[in-house]
Length: 379
Image 1 (cartoon, rainbow, N blue to C red):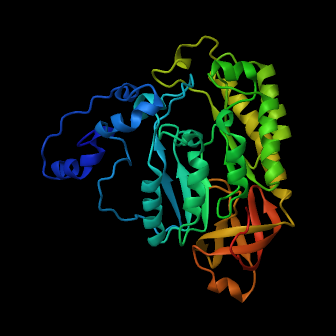
Image 2 (spheres, helix red, strand yellow):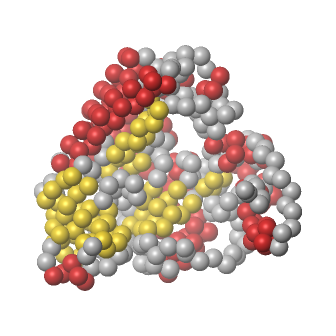
Image 3 (cartoon, rainbow, N blue to C red):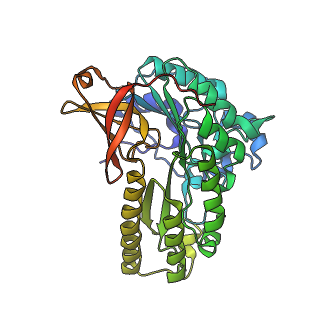
């Protein structure tokens, strides 16, 4: 039984609300509302207006805090909300419109995280490619300017960006992510599908050809860049030809990781009202079909890395074996198991180690330690 149901607007007074619960005091029931209506439609009008709206992680009021984990990887929320209106997604209705955190605020939090032992920053938001569009002049390059600042913080060895919208992934951003020292050449691209007809119904943009062109652009800067995505299978109106097109894209893209999800209705979304809904058994069959393909393709991609060198950030020691992730591996994208001699005993979580890949097991890699990784020189 829940003692209280709190909304995002309670964040600034969360400790007070918890004290009320512990003291047995009643808390008024939270009434959900569409947060998109709390801020102006125009992004440039939001910075001043947002001071009157409680947004998770926003504001300059100092807060006493403590890291709840000793992991060398820490999430850093760079924005909240989303201005996109994908027909299947309910996130904007409860997260609200897109609002960026100020770069100086992010640098301050990242510095604190580094002081607390974080070595990799994992930048999160609902749409990282939109970061800064509401911050005024020069906002079009806000993420490109933020990444080197974060990578330059003392103690931070790697900065990783999550959730990029393909339609908004501009050439300058690709270049910065792929070639900036301390920034992982890692592209978490939200393709969702490859059939133009299905993408239009999703209120998204793209096709197999435009997506492959973006991937080609990325690999022109960094051939070993990590590229992952998620796809939705069984969307209303999806045909066998649409699934064939998705398979064609995945086969040609050679992605490192692909999350596969079967479509299901989200309350209040446009897609909930679409015709052409598929039977659950059809969706399940198509999901398994794509999963089988993806398992084969991602294993092949991992095999291509055998014989190459990787920089592994050690996450933990498991049964005496250091386990971590290479630059192309996000938190849920597989891991590297380090092998070597007596020097393994000196490796601790947070270390950045250079190694040679000698075996692949699915998306996981076995890596022979060459030595500690010197400072990166990409530019």
